[in-house]
Image (cartoon, rainbow, N blue to C red; front, side, top):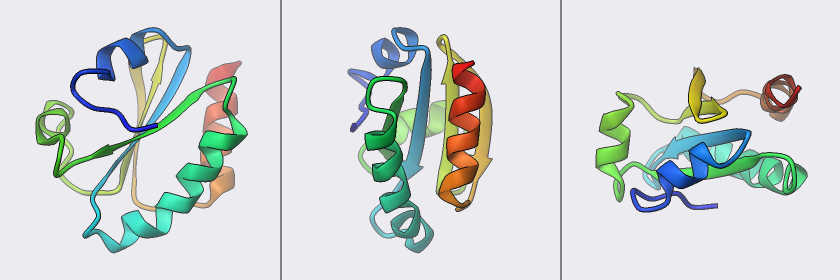
Length: 103
């Protein structure tokens, strides 16, 4: 799912767990993480929202959350930011985080 300024607030507040990948097309590590995020989106289709925010297109959102290096993953639970992870990690790392916040 692609998040923008127009759908960000509704998405985060109306879902139990939302995982947001702040990325950019020019970022090598972001391109490495991209397929993992896509897989997680499919794995959790009816349980959690896994989304991406292009920091070039949505610079205001990146600034709002103080994103200074990418990729950065923010995890929201019940509309509140509960965790921030920078860099690329294995898929299992993100799956474990999603499972933790779903319970």
